[in-house]
Length: 125
Image 1 (cartoon, rainbow, N blue to C red):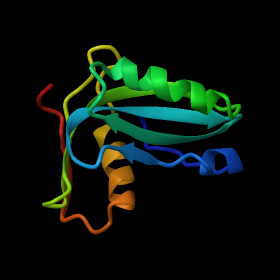
Image 2: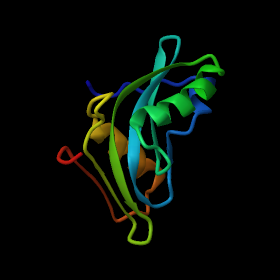
Image 3: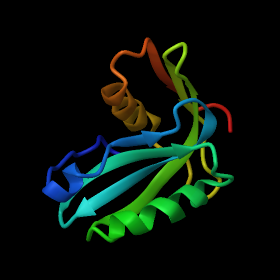
Image 4: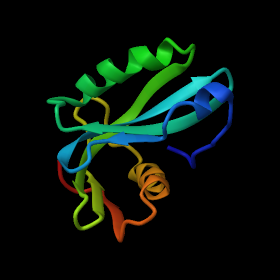
């Protein structure tokens, strides 16, 4: 994936860039949402999801109801340790492929500016 192009529209701005569980190890997906020719990426990750597709199937309808397009551009896992203020993004999705973890980490750093460590690895599943 090329460097992310962040465009703004009221609809896109209304969608939070990150929604992940408060702590734990869980699957996550990186979505590209579009409003006409404007787009942005968002991160979604939850412990309840057995598969990456479970997240997409739950998130996609709410976004599309707003008149926005969605595309899952990859996935992986997140190890979120809120007590130590650390997040590790790693791995890939069997169904969607590997997300561009650099984009995911940038989104997470913006939402968790007080964390001491937010990193990624392309290793692991």
